[in-house]
Length: 105
Image (tube, rainbow, N blue to C red; front, side, top):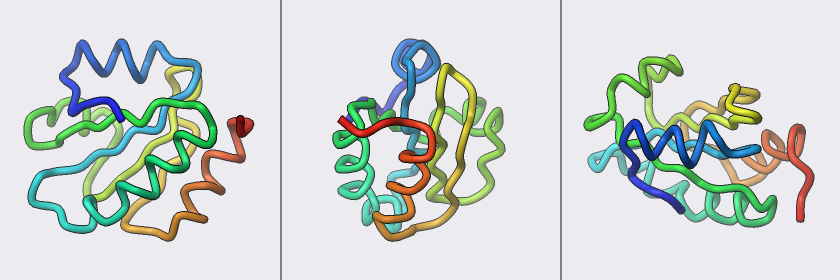
């Protein structure tokens, strides 16, 4: 897991990566805490970074990706959004989103 990141960290770890799973979260968001182990496992299984963006400190990044509710998880491939998952979901939903675009290790 990388983060929480600022704009420079987002550029380095999410946009410049071949693929990255971006977790938009906030300290006060309990569902965000609940899904963290799922996201870590899925990112690890696919060999991609899990990049955490705190929407309270980085509202510009969140706005750029249309984040209106938490948790919101965005899969970036080549710096472009390929899949977005809204709300707390089972691990299988995150796995499905990533597997559609990234081969597992």
